[in-house]
Length: 202
Image (cartoon, rainbow, N blue to C red):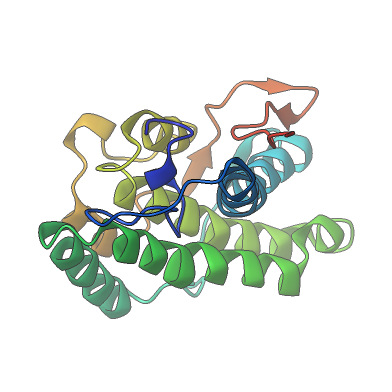
């Protein structure tokens, strides 16, 4: 239940508190699709691109860059996730995080293709990366009750303004969490980050 447990997936095999059938193949499929391919891939892309193309630092971040997740929408999302957690509907809370944060961020990444854009327009690619970092930060905070160690690893891979130990759900809708400069703190090897959630081979 910690890093690779059933409840870590957006669609748990056995939603709490009901019964369900466990399948090793189903477990592997969910882990690879929801964690490795979705969350893990987004994190690796963002950190890798910033590390390789910007020496690990995004500078001169403008306040005019549109937020990928509007603050009012984030306030509503936080309220919904908190309500689901309080009602012990963990699978629905996780599903909402995946659908309204991670899926949105990954779709934005696929559409904007910063890995291609960075070759011709580094400034525009930087804007996209800043928006994707928003998704990583929001996800990390929302996953704190479910995967505290993994969530902390995600969050502390960047030098966000607020300390992890003090961060709360309510901080999600208070802005990006960084001002005009953002640095990667994750350990890099040749500009690449070690896979946070490597795929599981059956």
